[in-house]
Image (cartoon, rainbow, N blue to C red):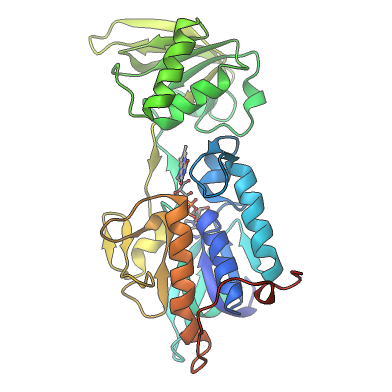
Length: 340
Ligand SMILES: Cc1cc2nc3c(=O)[nH]c(=O)nc-3n(C[C@H](O)[C@H](O)[C@H](O)COP(=O)(O)OP(=O)(O)OC[C@H]3O[C@@H](n4cnc5c(N)ncnc54)[C@H](O)[C@@H]3O)c2cc1C
């Protein structure tokens, strides 16, 4: 374990889109940041769950793939030289005698900081896994909970299970490249954007996609990590096998706050309650933004997280630069190192 204690102005817990934008907002107010993420890459849900999915509701980008959005946010943060600590979970937050915070991670990194911004999304997130016998032997080889590269499914017979946006969006996307796409859902109605459901119906009529409803997953057929079929059943127990090379199961994310639940913050159903403006939590100097933060009227959208990042940075400024007046300014090149 390292004995070095880093010292900084702000520690950002979570390098998802909102955490990355918080680096920029803090940087514009001359506050240095260290960013910690449990994953070994930046980007949070965008990188881990849907890198190739276009996002349509980022202002000034009629459509941008999630991975591209993350590249641009990292580029926007880069002039402020944040220090990234990836592949490690923040486990402990301890208030120091000087009224600062000591942040400690799972691999022993220690950071002494004036303020903490928790941008931890759904916490330590993981997929909801279907309760199927022998599932583990296929995970990562034939059973997946996310698509890293669409081309990995080219020419394959793919079973997509689920009834939400992810299931529908990936059906639309993989229908281009897969040999066959089956969609398994336990009811005929999908909880997804109506326009996407309509596009999926067109693919069904064209024979590119086959609907398997109302069915649910009941078993996996194959061996040595390679599926040959996915077994499905009706609620009455009537079973059939769908010949398949891969199963993509989209049953949502499990919310597990992990160590964050132990930090004594005001929690509201697995989220951190914050007060506006500023996104302050119940602990002094600790702020929460993005998906993990909640307040009346909260929308879990990336663009709302961006606004919360700006608010938190402004709220933290007097803690880091006490007595220094913060005159509200629009962004100019003066605030961004290296900008013309
Ligand atoms: C399939 C799908 C499609 C979506 N499409 C859209 C869309 O079109 N438009 C839109 O606005 N939103 C969309 N979203 C939602 C969007 O991705 C989230 O709102 C966004 O990712 C939230 O960003 P965040 O930075 O708050 O958290 P996240 O992206 O969840 O990142 C949080 C990070 O914190 C890390 N972390 C958690 N706990 C710790 C800890 N203790 N220590 C260290 N690191 C920790 C996690 O590893 C993670 O990397 C979509 C989501 C999904 C799943």
